[in-house]
Amino acid sequence: MRHHPFGPRERPVPVIGQGTWDIDEGDRALTIAAQRRGLDLGMTHIDTAEIYGDAPPPCRPSTAPIKGAAS
Image 1 (cartoon, rainbow, N blue to C red):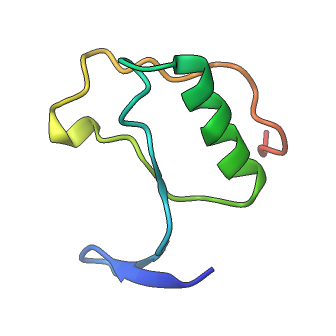
Image 2 (image 1 turned 180 degrees about the vertical axis):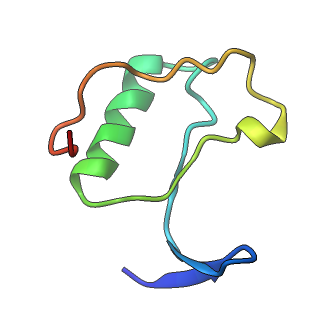
């Protein structure tokens, strides 16, 4: 996976990420399943869009454990 420097500290961020834009209005279970699949495949860049102001508060993250996540 290629990375690109991001922000003032130029931290390396993967050039491919995944968004959560449909988590509150669409099929929540399908959206969470897609996020989990991405994480299982090694994805580390997840855009939660909270800063955009278009997600209804409060954002409700999944509390279920994610396969392979560090404890």
